[in-house]
Image (cartoon, rainbow, N blue to C red; front, top):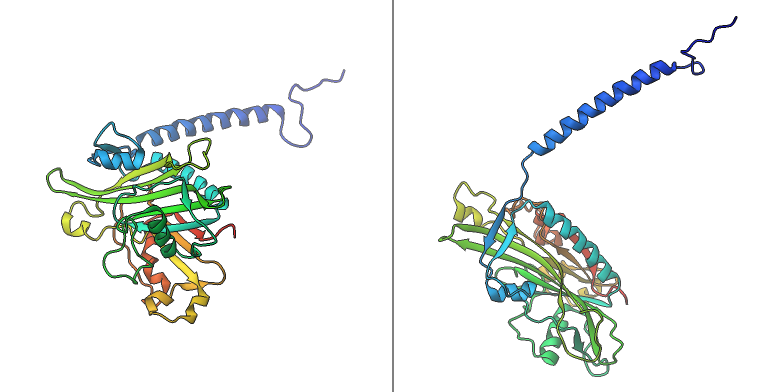
Length: 333
């Protein structure tokens, strides 16, 4: 009588018993790895500290439409919760740019208090808005915007004095109205330096806020945009254990943007500081930087670019943030 072995060979390979043993050993090894990895993760330091900053009731109202406090609890960098919100806001920013008709960057040193849903514009009588400077002049004329709110600024190295610390990005779109521009969204970037010797608060409160139309948009009336997304983070000094005041003076986050003008503007020769940015073949565009919640500080970065190149104005920003945008001034034209 023919006897059949209970350990039947699987073709010319392993027996079923051998495979069962391998699977059992694999389960034991993988289980040990999972336990070890979980212990390792739990023992890692988690940066979740929060600092309470005196942002003032007025500033909180301008930033977040909040009037309940005069302080803002802000996560200290690196903050991966803020990083997740920054990533979502980055995606929304790209979406807004893709459906825009024009983008204008207006630098400032004060809080942005002007967030209109529509801007008057008559194409038959108003000048062509082909630069941020002309857009600034237009809103001063038709909307009475104070000249001190947005700065008369062109690029780093062009105007004297310190670079602007804050920025408003106006994203315009079609309005359906013959004499009005629709403001699809405004993005405010604010980097506030705290040097309070009494409370020993040294560092930067950095934030990016998006303002957009209430849903649904209302045509033909004047009203303001409302907050619709933001992130914030507090950056401590780069060298907090040495000469705090002296080292902290070197920290910063400028420029927030540079503008590349059409190269045809080289027909009008100006200074080297101005002409080095005339590189756009057809359409002018911006480089824009946002504060990076994953960075540990805003310490000084080495800049090795030659002074006559545009890179000299922003070469050092590569070491401060991974949030860099290339944005056309007129995406949809």
